[in-house]
Image (cartoon, rainbow over all chains, first blue to last red; front, side):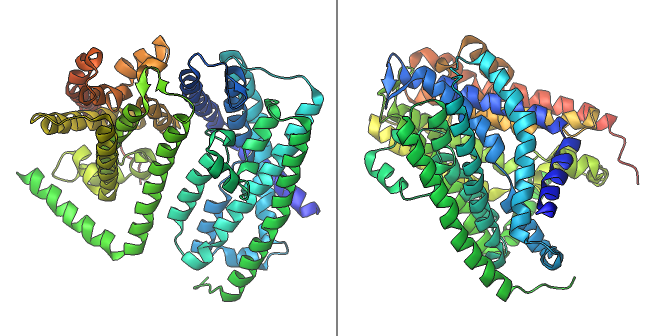
Length: 263
Length: 261
């Protein structure tokens, strides 16, 4: 266990060394939030509510989902693809840790770094620029925190899954890109799942994507009742467990057929 | 003449190398199509809840998005200079470029060409045809010509801005994240500018004129008379920004001292 905690720490320190990159990052996220803020203002026009969300709730939704993204987002799939293509994965495999577990911990270290140096200052800035409504209800915050933590795992698991496919496809840059745009739309980052037509919604219920962004953001904007929030978190938890299966299976097959060239 | 023949030689070489890895090319096409589809889905879903967006209908917004894709595709095919700093300045590759007999910027454009991005133009035109037929737009004999002029104007706006950003590396060594930021700002140009506040509208028109890539030229074809003036300004803005970027570039090259080694 110690070595995994150490992994989190090392990644955290590594990110800390390059922190200047993150100041522009905050700006980029603010620009994105701004674009969607104006867009939603126009979409609402004079309407009070759409799908049970008011304009202020929508603005809060947009802001919080981008800020939460800073925490759960990582490029583990691309990192893995690089390591596999360059053959570095051979060295990783003989090291005394679980490769996938170690990757997850690195992602977590990155996430914790961005939480403190990106999301929190970003949230303060966004709070002063846009008309956002924060709740000071500690229960909502703790549910939100727990739900975001689970989003991190779902997102990371999908990244690991995409990363592992490099073993079979050799070059999966296209797949990685495709996965990213799909997650942006179907996770609820760009627009709440409740805005989709009923038929699409019923399909998405059976997919893990909405656990990434929609659930925590809806909890934060208090568009979910306490009961709905608990069920949603339960579903997230369910997906975290379920996704372990295909990962372990693919990982097992990949290790069997792995051929390292040179070294 | 020499430049034209260089251009075609590079293109024929490029086509040969890309066709070596066809599967790769196909995946790239598909993932491009997917991200365009996602943007369209977004528009469709949003208009499930509203009829007008700042006075623009669903099909008009779709038409604008379709138009935007065309100059954007031309830009991505020919101005692939977002990693200019790392690739040419830090690694000292620019030394090699400067020994070549053609203009340094043209040489870099040729080396970094990415013709497959032009597929986006096909998607864009298809989207425009869909949006246009829904709106019942009719084509006049001059429309195709103006379309080409506006597309070139829009692509030059994009090219000018990104060349100028690349020029920053001549003066400042540090790696900046301005370029990804600019890609995000450019997304603002896909929607009608009148939904933004005055300041952003001003910036999108005169400082980072991304509105000239999407809304402004597209409004001409949509018959939005109040924006005609801006539509016809598109080529002028494109030429102005691109010329400015070339002047900056030439100044920068003079200042370039090499990376040592």
